Image 1 (cartoon, chains in turn brown, yellow):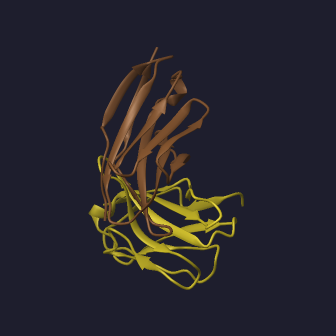
Image 2 (cartoon, each protein chain N blue to C red):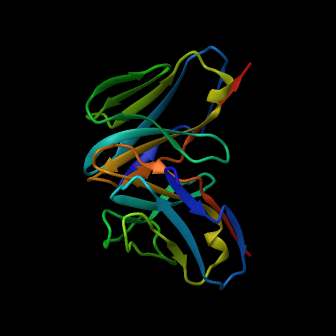
Length: 109
Length: 112
């Protein structure tokens, strides 16, 4: 199984940058995912990393270091609508995901 | 149907009662999952199915059962509900062509 750690809460100002770290321990790594979840809604997919390095998608980027068991999600040019929980998830095998407890990001004007 | 749907949206249930949460997807995904989400604990996998006709236990399977008679439907049954099963339940699906899981809107269940 996995042990997935991420900070509980982060606060940032509109227009700023925030980096959410995620560390994990797993016996059979097969990909790392980041999901966004607004309060009262379902999680939605943000990014996927399976090889080391940076994946960029608009204002959001995700980085992975498999040797360190480490990933981060970078949110740039923060907007009020980015206030949400961000979930780090690790896949073992073909399908199953294990999720961290999530990081609640609050964007302030 | 567009994507993945769940029913009911919310339910209040007396302890000891039987309850089935429904999940249907129209994306022809082979794999489906049930999670519960509790404050501070994140999403935890209850049961999963890699393909129609097969199921497997996740991290917290006790008190729950599932079936996968066809590709589209994956119901979750609580045989005799207990208050600790109060949670938000999410169904999800995925296939080998896409890396991500797609989540349904969730069912908020309260067991009194």
